[in-house]
Every structure is written in C-alpha cells, then in structure tokens.
Image (cartoon, rainbow, N blue to C red; front, side):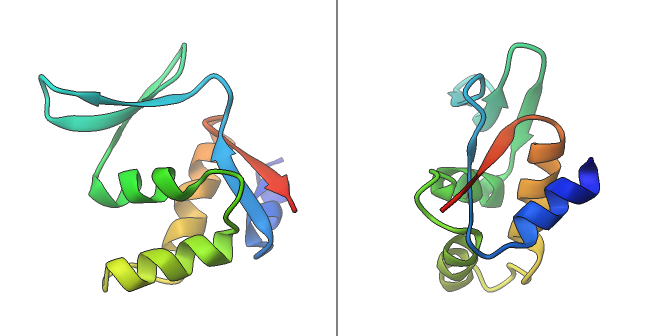
Length: 98
C-alpha cells in the first residue's frame, strides 16, 4: 500500500491536504507547532510548518515545491514529497487529484 501512496505523491498534479481528523496547533508552552490527531501528535520544525500550511488541496506537489524552493535554499527536490508521503502513510494527510 505504501508504494501506491508514493506513486500518488510522485504525480506533480497531486494535491495534498491534512486528513479531516488532523489539525495544526501552536503549543505556546513548548513554543512549537504540532499536528494533532485523536491518536498521534507530530511535532513540526519550521520547514514542516511551511509545508503543512501550503498543503490545502488547491496547490499541487509541484507548486508547493516551487514555493518552498523560493523561500528556503536548503529544500531538496524530494523533501516535500518525502514529508507528504510520510504523513500520508501515517494517515495524517490525504491526496486529492485535480
């Protein structure tokens, strides 16, 4: 099943979004953002926050990669895909096809 998800994400037209049961929240006590689901908490770094903010089911993987590439020099070509693929595999994100 993971390979199917990776193939979906490999498609430049894939449009990622948070799964309906997942929310991004800022934890003021810890000073960091996290994704919250009923069973899991994912702590995000600054790049992870930027990726999640752009995963709105309107932007494609390719558009997200270009946007982040203009913001951060250190974003490698596959970083967005790997991040999204990991969250899809853990049921934290879903993929829409445009």
